[in-house]
Length: 152
Image (cartoon, rainbow, N blue to C red; front, side):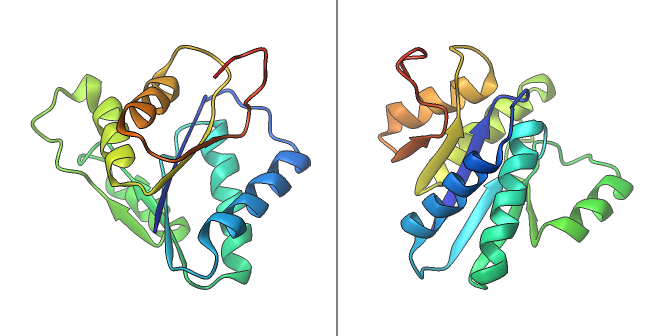
């Protein structure tokens, strides 16, 4: 099973949301082998990574996967990521304009995922675009920030 994460770069983490996310991961995955696809570029990504690490501490069948939008990351950056993630994946998007690399990476993550978890509260930004793409593809989605006010 593959689970992709998307959220706004400005995200207010809380202990309650962390418990909610870890509980959701346990419910969705059961005892199946799971790969967590993470982007690593904002506060939500940091939050999701920490929750996935918490999950993995009691579920050895989980892998942390950094999906990079840039094949040209420096050696130092990739070496640091190797200490945090089990795998680094670069989708085949090298023919896309570099300024749209994150958008294409996000689309690849959605297409590859069996389940999408997001923290979307605004109708704009790359995370929102990924969320809308997941909706269009009919992917199962859970929005941690779903409220009547944001209507998502």
